[in-house]
Length: 234
Image 1 (cartoon, rainbow, N blue to C red):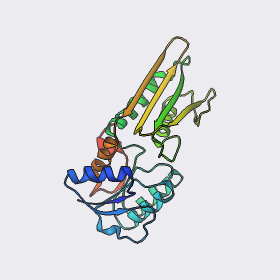
Image 2: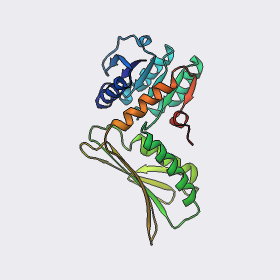
Image 3: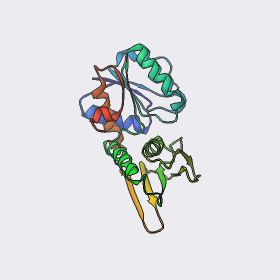
C-alpha cells in the first residue's frame, strides 16, 4: 500500500517506521510549508500535521478521492465541514483524537464508569492530562474526548473547562513535561474515597501503530468512521 504522510514531525517519522515494517511504501512526506505535491499518488493519507493546516490537508485528500486518517487535534471547528465534504465526495475519512488501541479501550471504560457513577452524587469528577512540551494544544484532544464522553453518560455535568470547575463543569488540568508521550487520568472523589482510572503511554509506538492499522482498514471503504469501527468495539 502506498501511504502519504501529511506532517513529518516525531509522530510522522514513527508512523513511517511502523508502516515500512508492515510492508507499506511511504511515497510522499509533506511538511507544513510544502504546497505543491500530488496526493493522488497515494492509496491512503495519514495526517498528523498541525491545527492550522489539518483541514486543508484533509480537504485535499477528499477532493482527490484519497482516503484520509487524521490524528491532528485543535482543528475541530472544521470537523463538520470535513464530514460534509467526505459525504459530498463519497470519500473515506477517520478522525480520532487518539489512535492508540489501549486508549480506545480506555474510552469505553471511561463511558462505562461515568454511567455507573452518574447516580452517586457524592463523587466529583476531575481530569488530568500530561504531554510533552512540543504539544501545541491544551487540553489534549484525547482529554476533550474523555470529558465529552463523561458528559454524555453522567447527568450531573454539561461542560468541561481548563483548570476551572463548578457543580456542572469537569475541570481538566493540563501539564507539559519533556518527553512524556501522554498520560490521562480520571478521578471520582468523595469525602471517603477516590476512584481513578488512568492510561499511560510509554512510547509513541502505540499511537502510530493504531494509525497505520486504521489506514489499512479504511482502504476500499466509503464513509465517515471512528476507531470503534476499526476495532469493532463500542
